[in-house]
Image 1 (cartoon, helix red, strand yellow):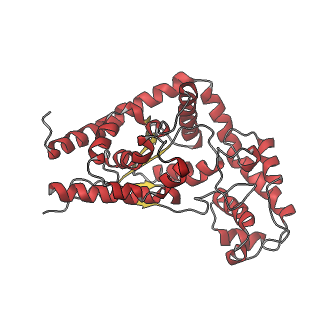
Image 2 (cartoon, rainbow, N blue to C red):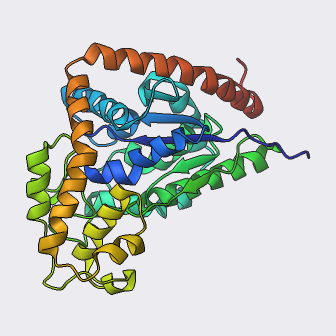
Image 3 (spheres, one colour):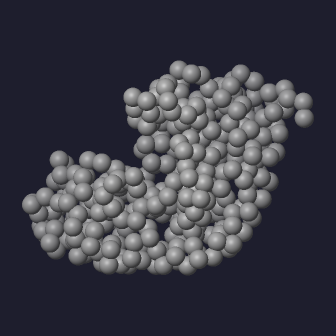
Length: 338
C-alpha cells in the first residue's frame, strides 16, 4: 500500500467554560499564535460540545464562547490566517465522534486518567459524555486530518488515544486514511501553576481569585496579584537546578521566561542572586506590558458580540469545507449509504 502523505495542519481547542487565565494564554493561545505565523494551516476551536459534558448555564456558555473567541483574537489569532469557530457549528465533529465511539475500546477509555480525576468517587453519576470525551476529541482532530496538535501535558494522553483510534480505523478497514497525529508540547510555561500554591495548576475553578491572573485583569490587578504571589525566603539561583524543590519560585521564573520568550536558564543568568522583592516588580512590569493590551482588546470585542458571532460563522463555513469531505469519505469507507 502506498503511504499517504498528509498536508501539515494544526488543530487545537479550548473549552469555553468561562474565565481565561494566564495559564490558558501561556499554555495554549500564545503557542497557537506562534504556529499561525509559521505558515501552517491552523484551525482553532471553541469546544462547546466538550463543555456540556458537565452542566453549563446556557447564558453563561454563550458568554464564555464569545469571551474565548475574543481572547483568541486579542492575543493575536487572525481570522484571516487561522480558522476560528465553535465546535457545535460543524456537525461533522459529532458524526465522526459516533464512528469513533464504535472504534475505540472500553478498556482504552477506562485508562484515561483525566476522567478518573474529574469523576472522582461519583463516576456512576457523571455524564456518558464525560466518559467518551476523548473519542469526540479524536474526532475534532481527525475530521480535519490534523497532523499536529498543540496541547498541555494533561491532554497528551488524549492525543495518544487519538493516534490509537486512527491506527485501529486504518487497520480495520485496510486503508491509510487518517494521519497519526503528533502532539506538540513545548515552551517554558506550558503548565502554569497557582500563584498561591506552586504544586497546583492555575485554574479558573480555584475559589481564590488571587491564585490566578485572569486575561480580563487590568494592570493594577495583575501587579497586585504578582506582588502577593507566594514565594520562599531564598534568593533566586543562577541555574535551573537551583529551583528544584521550590515550586513557587520555579513557577514565577517560568512565567517570566515564557512572557519574555527566553529559557529559564537565560532568565536566571540575568536575575540569579536577586531576592523576590527585586524580581516581582520585574515580573509585574513584564506581565502588564504583555497582557494589558490583550485585556483591553478583549473588553472592546465583548462590547461587539455581533462582530464575534460573524467571525465564528465565517470560520465555521471554512471549517465545513475541510471537514465535510473527510466525514463523507469516512462514512463511505465504513459502508454507509449516503
